[in-house]
Amino acid sequence: MKSNLPLRLFLSLLFFVPLLISGQTLSIPKTVFAPGEKIPVSFSGFSGAANDWISIATKDMAEDKYIIWAYTGGGSSGTVTLDGRPSGEYELRGYFNNESKVRTRISFRIGNVDQTLTVKTDKATYKPWEPITITFSGLPGNAKDWISYGVVGTPDDKYYRWAYTDGKQSGSLKLDGAEEGKYEVRVFINNDSKTQIRYPFTVCTSCGAGKKACRTELSTFYQSMNSLGLCWGRLGSDAFTATTIAAVQTQLGNVPVGITSIGCLDFDVNKITSYSSRLPGMTQASAVSEIDALIKEIQASVMRARVTCDRGALLESLFSAGIHLGAAQGIANSFVCQTIPPPWQTNLRNHLGLVSSGISGFGPCLTGVNSATASTVPVGAPNAYEALSVIIGLHMQVLWAVSLTECCCTCP
Image (cartoon, rainbow, N blue to C red):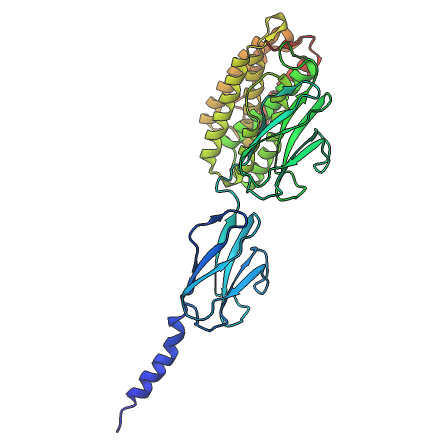
């Protein structure tokens, strides 16, 4: 009987051929391109048909949708060059012979390699109609990226002055000044009307030397430091979930206005907004480490400012009271309906000790607030809610007292 080996071999090769073209790949020389820069794409493992094709699309586009495309011209491997695009997140997609089924894809970004977007003014306060100098970095480099400033609280698309960045990823620009008021710089990408980042500043006749922070400014400062402390405590003690992160980001939004309310602190509040925006991508350990460093930077800024307060009160003590009461609240809140674990009890007592000394240091301006209350917090109670209630009560006493204080603190 004759062997069917040649037929069997033919059939085995027939079924093997698709495996030879199953490893389709696309590759690019880098993952970040400048806006408008041409994109060379190498491909391999394609079918070799003249109508194999490669496209650029956004990730949310259906497989048969694209922004631009080009045929490979045949061959299982080779290179095609596609035109550049504006800044954004994109992906390259590979297809066989005019099909609409994506065979392979890779992601890339168009914009600045430095993803940390920053903006700030050259000083915190200006005289009326004094030009405003703004420094920026981390922009994607579109010709129509733009920067404006407007009155705090107004819609993002309403502005007092504005200018294009002319395709620069970093640099500075000078805008005409304004009348007295509280303003914020706003950064926009590629003619969009969504603010990417903002930075507050003030225009006033009595800005700078001798500026006073009285009950409104001091209570704003205290509340913002309490919010920052609450974030600090919660990030360390609570489950690091999307819910926790969202709550922390909300609290962090209160911080910049409190720092700028004093008028002579040199801390860059843009660091707070940058931290908040990057928080979802961090580990819990890095989130805690970075917020700890930010708090130390703000404390150093308060000390450098050498602000003098009435009745011998110390602004750094008000800072300490706010930060550590907030941290205490964050820790107690993390363990509601259970006993606070012993290591966290120790941590909480340390914070409360600093609360006590902080209240004492600003005590001459805090009518009706007893620093000893911090030592009465039932840290070891069966339900942490008992401790939380006392902590919140003490916080409200301090906030109320600062809101009604007759004291002012004066910048040198």
